[in-house]
Length: 294
Image (cartoon, rainbow, N blue to C red):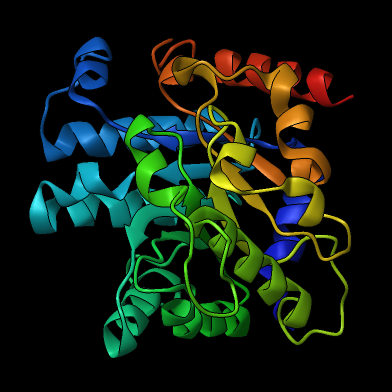
C-alpha cells in the first residue's frame, strides 16, 4: 500500500527532526565553493548538499529556478540530484511554485509528482493565484501516489503583504484575507481527505501551506490557533529562518499548534559554511532546532 506523504513526513520528522536544507546554487555560493557557474557546477553543488544531508536531515528542497535557467541541461542535472536524494531516503520538496488551471496545472502535477516522471519528487510547491480549487487535480494526484504539496499563503518576502493581506469582498469567505483563505481551504482539504486511501491514520495531512517565519501571521489574516486544533494537522513549509532573520526559538510562538508539523527551511545560513563544513553545520542547526522544540 502507498503511504501518504503526511505519514512519510511524520516518520522523517520522528527520525531526523524538522530541518530541511535548500539546494540553492546562487552564483556567490558557487564561487565560494570553488565551482563554475555552469551546469556542471550546479550538478556538483546539488550532489554535495545531498551527501551532507544524507544521514543528518530527512528533507531537501531544490530551488528549481536555478536549474531551469540552464534549460534542458539544467533540468538534466536537477533530475540526477532529485533521483540521488530520493535513492538516499531523503524526502524531496521541489520548490517550483507552479500554478495554472485545468489540464495545464494537471500537467505540472504529473511532471513533479507522477511516479516514473524524470523530475519525480515527493512534494512540490504551488501558487494558488487562480484559486485554491484550480489545484484540485494536483492534490488528487498527490493523494493517489502518496505525494505532497505546499501552497503559498503568507510568504517571507516583503513585497507579499499587499496581495496576501488583501480582504475578500464577496462570496462565502467574505472578510477573509487572501492568505487566510488559502490556509483555511488547505486545512479543510486535509480534514476531509486525510492522505492516501491506506486505512492508516496520520497526525499530518499531505497538503500544506507556505507560511513565512519573518511575518506576523495575524497581519495576514492567518490565525494558526484555528488551523491546528484537530488531526490531521496541516503541514507547514517555513522559510525565513537563518539568513532572513527568524530564530528557531520563535517556532512555537509563530506556528502554535502547527509547530510539530512545520518544516524549517535553511539555505544560505548553512550553505555559506562551504562543502567541507556543511554536514557539521546542518547537524548543529538540527540540534539547535530540536533544543528549541524540547
